[in-house]
Length: 340
Image (tube, rainbow, N blue to C red):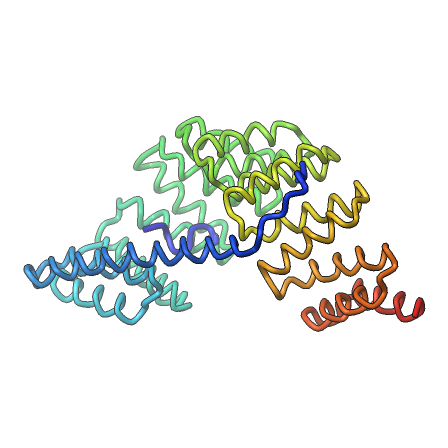
């Protein structure tokens, strides 16, 4: 199971529009994942019935319940595990994840410190304490615990990754890049470090960002995050054909990715002036998220530019209904009211 608070840690148009019936595919995927998790819970439950005094099984099922956001059952299972074996640091790690999911930061910290007391050189505990300190912007303490991990294992890439985040957060871009690069040097499959390097180089408008996003995609070709970041680099650097192609690639992976539709619409509206195409893309974004205020506003712009004042007004009003004090929507309404 992934760390619950992992650093807590954001178009070439072929003019063929994907029906938003396909947006249901993402729901089907989520449903399939839930079925798999439920099956795993059932399997672990069967093992517990055969070995009711095995604390590892309760810990395993607690993690599965947590994945399903079933906090009460997760908490019951991990407490049962701790009743059987109250000196297992990994059980306290699971309990800390549950407390964090419940929004109980103080309990999370106390639980991690118990785990640290039981096993001072457990690097997973040290990383979680460091991450929690990072979350609360306690950077001195973050470095303190990261340095402890490096004393145990000086080659652990995650230590450098977390340090990179701290330097990024505190505005030291050079040291952030240095630490993220060390992380990927030590683990060439460190997807998250490649993403962070891409973000930092993209902020500098440095084309090395594309190389890092491509490295991330080599690890996970289905990553909409990496594809989207890559598309945004192209878009922000006026490479519109490349951006269009990238956003269309995202839609092939995830037909419910509303931001890809939105950016396809935005490029066609603002830079290519292909109004009908842009409007259809904004409609796709709205079908995938009926509460997408920015998509309504931009579709309103499309209607306004072709003189369809009534539909423009409807979309501007809808955008304002969804997003209070949306200044651009207010200005749009004022314009169409004057035109009427």
